Amino acid sequence: MNEPSERPQRPPFQGAGGENPTVRFDATVHPGATNRDLLGVADLDLDRIPDREGEVRVVVHAEDCRRLLESGYEVRLHAQVPVRPLPAELVEQDDSVRSWLEERVQGIERSGGT
Image (cartoon, rainbow, N blue to C red; front, side, top):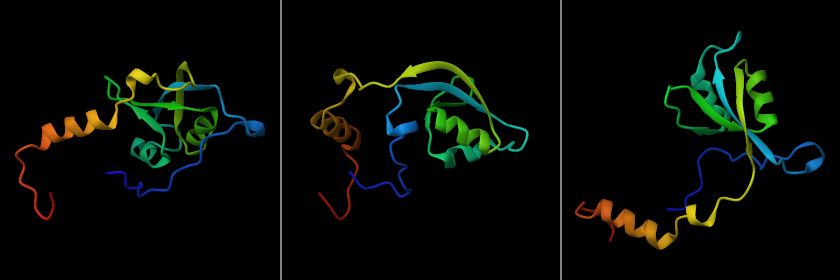
């Protein structure tokens, strides 16, 4: 269940001087003058979020914006998103996740295991 991702993980972003940034940006990525294919955004390992209009919406640091621009995309910033811990009430506990999963897989025949 806790297997490592197959793609390499990028290190936590640190700004100039090694400090952690206090803000990220809600942004959309659009085809640019030199890169028209938005499928390549997935290869940049950014935090993408669903968008009702089907746009490529991301939450990015300034460094991520630089990478997108250097990759030939256009980036439109919409809002600042402060960096802070996730509220404890939004973090699901292991027992409740296991229970939820067991409800979903109940009745599915399992081969080679319990």
